[in-house]
Image 1 (tube, rainbow over the protein chains, first blue to last red):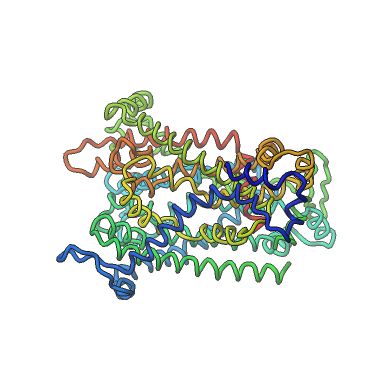
Image 2 (cartoon, rainbow over the protein chains, first blue to last red):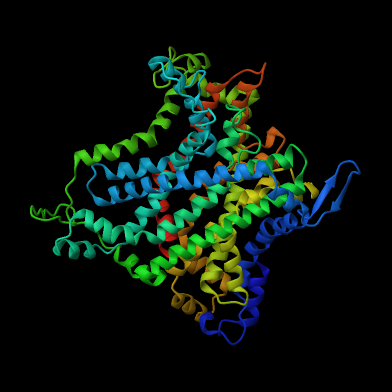
Length: 312
Length: 312
């Protein structure tokens, strides 16, 4: 705070607009950005550096000392089947759940935007509501419904003589994906919807005069317009999926034999740190996951923006 | 991307569809007056049901006793209408621990979330309205931070905080909550769009200091954006699970979400009293403030999401 007033006192009001002021260095912006950057360095950059450094060490319980081991934590990770199976699970979710969720979100956005629904505002608000529900509450509610002892599923099984078990090994990923889809469909819908609202309506009128029907307008105007939003929602979904932790970790108590401690990479990192005391190994895992996420998000962003420029 | 979509944003401010102006054309599709369809509404309504039925489940089961919760059908009311009893129990069980958790959550939202908004507003404004050395570097780093899995950072942050003796204190939750890169990004867009540089120049001509200009000229213009960023940040902080989970051991500092999960786990601990009726009712109490706030301020959500989707 003091830096701002200090700077201003020195530079005075006679200075021209900061934009034009390229030749003499204008430090005034730092007064505004500085506080954020300070905290950012402390809670973002410092832990990152700390994780990088500690991933090069290993704790030897026998000698009770932490020794420098170079890259061996990383080598160990690449040969660790628990890491790979966890990574494979989140990749499966990414390949199956994310496209389904985004397709539903896009369908809903186009439907609400089309003006053909009765009560479209009610649709928009209701579909968004689950996003406000904490993942913990969402996972608990769905967990209660999935329950085979006294949950909704057990009641259905009893009534229709079914043998459904959402917590069985072969269904667990689908069950978790369903909770994620439920939570985030409305959020993604609203991003698509907001983007659709920015289309100039004279485009539709021009298309209609040229004889285009509604489906052609959706295909040739609306969906191409959504490309930027698709890139963004995909990137957010990738980041979210690679971080998958809350839903499986809360459901773990309900399906302890199916949801293991290494069910997702993030759960594995958590349990390595807090249950087995392998914090250096967990740091290496966190960094590898961070690099994979950033790399994939970057590729999607490049692709998304390139196709967009090609079209635009 | 920015160049192609920016003008469309302006266009969208004019009313899109002439309401009440009958322009029904039987021959071809008229985008200005789409006809509402009951069939389409019902088909799309499947997703509406999907979004709402877990909430209905929550609402119905909050009226049941623990006994009824286990023994009666999930979508039917129990023998006793126990909503009021449940609410009273939620607040009195465990010596009124729920109230303590509620106050903790408010503390984290107000200090952590509020602080995050304050820092994001200052920094977003600084980045949008000043050209200073290191500006691009700050911007790129913060944008990159959005892609870094925050959970990947949580473990190293925990280790760092443990060395400083910060773990198991409210500060361990508040300090990391202070940085909201997405909030900063939204604020940057709002400030770029809604604060004209000419206005700042005029204020400077009149001899107003940078800080005074910010508070008296820019802040009122930024107010809608601040509401949006506050909504996002407050919801994120209110729903935060991973961070308090690893940072806090003492249940006196738990936020609601962690507390509810702990109550739920009692059902799986031999000898502990299952209180799932309180988990359900407590969940309901936890989400009511979020839903009420959302319904009152819903236009600000869309403002934020459209800013995020249009500009990137």
